[in-house]
Image 1 (cartoon, helix red, strand yellow):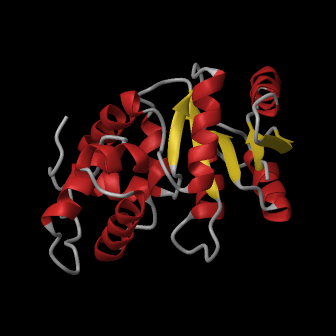
Image 2 (tube, rainbow, N blue to C red):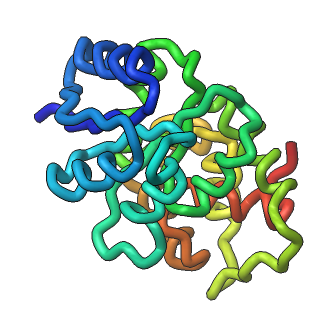
Length: 218
């Protein structure tokens, strides 16, 4: 089955271009487009796509509020949202991640990376390209308001610490399995355990916690 995607961007040429690129990729189908955040939320709630690709700066409701409405902490059945931005140090990205986004992309990402990000978000795997994940997450963690990160409900095992570091560096489950010489199912078990111990809802929150607690440095 194809991954069903909604694309939202207020610039028609960008929105159309993203939709065309995604539709041309195997296993991906664009089922809706929106020019503002309000319409994007409406479409997403009605169509229930596998992935929502949202620009951060949009009229009516911006990408952050749209993300929070569909994937925020109070949403019972959150959708997978990936935010896109022109600038790799956009101040809004940190807020978008906090609002529940699974990851982010730069608008100059090529078709291959765009497709990979959509498939990854649909499968709950990698956030985005590892080449930018670690640097950007670290930058936004440094920019976060000073506060004491929540402590795990139970101490992390040595193996969980290793998986935590790998997730924070943008590694996919398959890459983690190869690097640590463990099975894919074991990786998934460790990630599920990390989410439970940290109270994290997805891999983004696991990665951000790793940076905020200085377990991983950039």
